Each structure stands twice: as structure tokens, then as C-alpha cells.
Length: 388
Image (cartoon, rainbow, N blue to C red; front, side):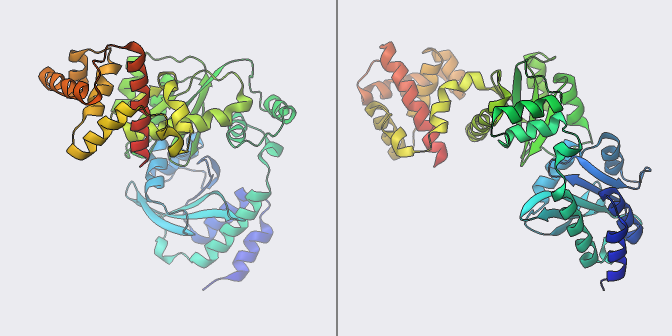
């Protein structure tokens, strides 16, 4: 049964979200955390340590560790007002904080002193709705424009003119004279591990970085250059089963939103087309961007040479891999050994397929310009096949 008087007292006597959270804690006797939609802590109570490792880690660092973000993204339905999920053997009642159909963050109640089953959900929901109104009316830059918020605003295209952009950059003490790089890391396949492991690994590689989370991706912006070697980076991505892509240097943060959109589309493509865990480089896939950014499949179909169409029809009818074979053969400078290594096939198999290819397209593959056109056509074909 809803105790309206207690709810009214909490709302009337609270001057901030910190006070709302503390009052709610005293009402239900369970630890509470409130985060924004980027998983940064806004408020929490109690301020002392609890029996839960995650609560203590989050309170100390000011954000949820990436392991938990991945777990929440995997199990939480954002369309439901609240949901109970289990992390590290502790159940959590998670309310989606929403106002005017805008998702603002989460209110998380930890099962510790009292069972979540005894909590009055209707009363808690009313208080969470009050939190939502409070959070909605607070403009981040009016409190303190952090660099993290500034980057988020750039990603959201908030700054519609350069003057406002420059004013906000100055307020956040963002250095616009340096070049930055953007890294997107997919958390879709990242599995739950010890708290802070991935955060620690990222600290070792990217110094002075700004980290945000959007949907199922971790966004890292950092000054051009990093500490680790390519081998160390690839080892870290393989160890944690991560896929990501790093941008070319970004000269002007005013266009960060455009850089993000291109990089996000590229990451989605690479997630479909590659099976290895690695940090890919945008510069290595510049030739793909024009195809990935072009949404009109019919236009792209006209860019495929007739010879490649013939090969694709033969593959479809006979369940063969002639297009893939030609792609790897040409991409590896017509090296049989390299193509066989990439495709895990014997050289004789590659040779047999090449003979068949030459027969179908009536070409000996010795014309450099034609081969270059074949590669471009095969890239388009691979992309269209992935889209379908």
C-alpha cells in the first residue's frame, strides 16, 4: 500500500537529489545508487562501505565499471519501468529514470538489509519520477561543464554554431589546439569479469582519455598518440574478447559527431565481416567508407563489374567461394602462399579455383587496372552481401 504521507515528506523536505536518495534509503533501508545515462554516479547512499563489491567500487570511482555496463546492457529492458537483475550474487532493483520520453539514467536499489520483494514498488516509482523531474531541469553546463559532458555534447551535435562550441570548450578547459583520436569499442560480446579489469587495462594504454558509453559501445577520446605498442594493444583486445576501431587524427572537435557516425558505421560493418578480436584502424578501411556511407544498394550494384557479377552468380548457383578466393588472391599481391594462409586452404586448391575464375571471366588477371577494379567490385559485393 502506498504511504503517500511519507512520499510527500521525502519530496517536500529534499532540496537535492542527494537528499532524495538519502531519504529513500531511510524509507526502504537498502543501499541506493543513481546514475546518469552514461553510467556516471550522480548520488548514492550510504556513504560508508557495504557488503557489495560493485557498490563500493562505483562509489570510489564515480562510475559503473565496464564489466557491469556490459551485463546491464545485455539483460536490462529499457522499455520496462523497473526490473530485477542479479550481479555478483546480489539482486538489484533497477528503475529506468525517464522524463518526457527521455532516458536520463538509473536508480538502483541493492538487496541487502531488506528483500527487494518487500519494497513498495509504487511508492519507489513515485520518488523515482520526482528524481527524473529534478534531473531533467538541471543543465549540466550550469553546474560545471566537465570535459566528459563537453565531448558528449559534441557527439550529440548540441553545438549548432562555432561560437557556442568555443565558449563551452573554454568552460570545460578542453584543449582545442591538439589533435585527438576516437576509439569505439563494442561491449556487445564482452563478458562479465572482475570489476575494473578493463578500466585498468585502458588506463595502461590511453593516458588522459575521456571515456563515455553510448548504447553498447565504449567511446574513448584521447590526444593523438598512446603508450602501448600495436602488439600490446592487440593482445589486450584479444584477452578481453573486444572488437573496436580507432579513427584517423581528428583535427577539429566541432565535427566530432560526423567522425563518430563514420566510425560507428565502420565498426558495425567490421563486426559483421570479421571474426577476430582486434582494434582495427580507420585508415586501413578508407576505401570502404564510401560504400558503407552510401545507403542506396541499387546505386552500388551499378558499380560492380560484369565479370564479378558472373562470378557471384556462379558462387550462388554452385555454393562455391570463387569471389572470396579472388578477393584474397588480389588483396595479397597475387601471392598463392598468402592467399592460402588467409583462407586456410592448400595452394593447390587456390590454383584450381583461380583456373576456374579465369575461365568464367575470360581474363588472365595480369592487367593491373582491371585487377584494381575487380577488388573494388568485390569490396562492394562483400558489403552488400553483409547488408542483406
